[in-house]
Image 1 (cartoon, rainbow, N blue to C red):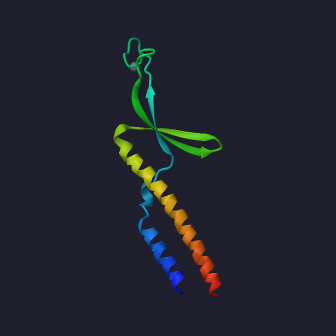
Image 2 (image 1 turned 30 degrees about the vertical axis):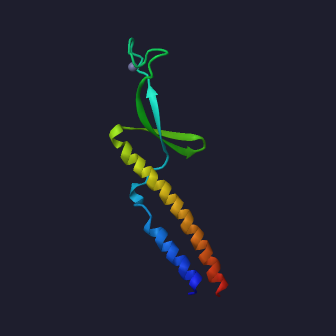
Image 3 (image 1 turned 60 degrees about the vertical axis):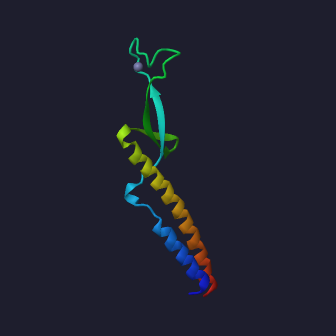
Length: 113
Ligand SMILES: [Zn+2]
């Protein structure tokens, strides 16, 4: 193994160490929405004045083919869901970086045949 290959493997090891626990990941993004209850006289929902109730939190997941799955998230689960979304994004980013390093390694191995 040459220096270049050894450097690439070392940088890949560093990326691997930053990998989040895959068992926690969630896809999608978290949206907030105000809701109206339609009860007569509700001061939160009064036309032109009230802003409705909430916000409520919704996990929006794209399923492809323009299909979206929306999952309401209880307030006490919001932090956990946010951490899981961050873990997913982090994992995807690291996977791309590792794939890039592996591509360079492949070139290096071919060069040394
Ligand atoms: Zn209301």
